[in-house]
Image (cartoon, rainbow, N blue to C red; front, side, top):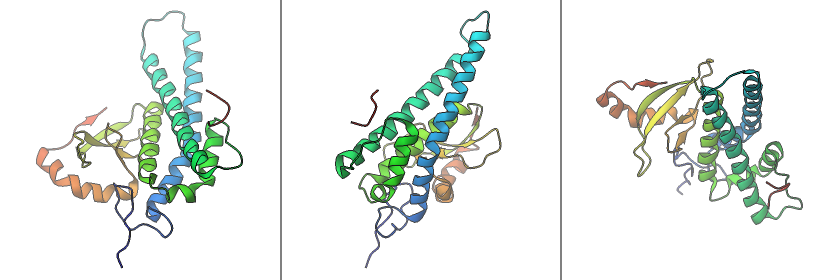
Length: 217
């Protein structure tokens, strides 16, 4: 009897019982959800600090802080929108007795309470990819000085972007591997990715380092 494959296209391991993804991808999905409130709050803290510095400045002109502020605002908006979108899916299909309020901690707690349902949903592969991408967006906004190492060409069908590993300036080693199109790989998938893109990387030379309402409708 053949075993079902993990529906995270960047993994393709064996799916766990009662779900559509492997145990590793299930764990990564839960971890991504759990990180959202932290990343959202941290972006808010940095925004507040940027506002304080802006008020303290006597003179201005366009400064790098404007780009940083825009990135932080975008990250917070994307986190809220994505969490609300997936919560709306749960509300529409499960019909829970109560709808969650439209704030990130509440939405994430709601999604985590339905994690078993989500990992069994046909769209779980999309969920992992989308939440991985939004976490990466927020991390880059929080730490724009991270070093990005080019690994090679993205292996996703129709994608011509370059895959990068983000190496945090503060020494954390659990950054996502991703491409600008939003395709991401989790840490437990790095080795398989390296085996796929490694020959292309070696052939091409060393990669360069480059720097709304109260509840869900």
